[in-house]
Amino acid sequence: MRGTAHIPLAAAAALLLAALPGCALPPRVEAVSASSRAATAEGTPVKVLVSLDNPNDAPIELTIWKYSFVVDDRTAYSGEWVASLTLPPRTAMEAELPALVPASFGDFAGKPWRIGGSLDYRATGKLDRLLYQLGVNRLSTGFGTAGKGVSPVAEPAPAPPPALAR
Figure 1 (spheres, helix red, strand yellow):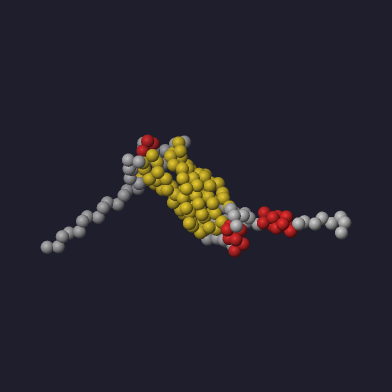
Figure 2: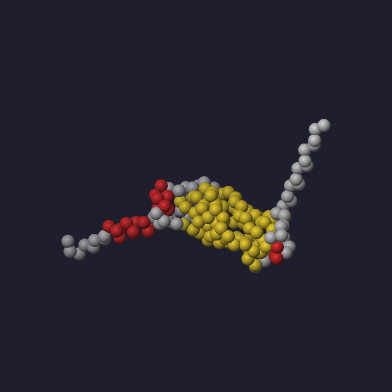
């Protein structure tokens, strides 16, 4: 047949696979608050509470956070955290991201902070899972959110020792 373009099967499959990944919209991430625990010689543990919103009609699985926590324009912490969280469709929830601010930062309680990086996630349909396992459907979104002031959280006092029976 002259004048008819033939698309090889492999090329058609590649076009189909290229069109399928990324069907899920990324979750929205916003800062809620940051709180610190008792300082140690190494630094001060901080937990950043973020709000997550799934804009999709299907659940999405959050897999890995890769982020930096910045205090007063100085990077205090960079790392990864396994998300292990499934966001139900059209639902918002909260998650905590840990950080350790080095002791060299001194008192940072009232300082502005921000957290940002990337969040890997995957869609939950059967085809999405297959494509993820094949390494084709790797979804990631950038995020960046900020707040002011880190609230100290009082550690609970240790329980008194039990009274001795006489």
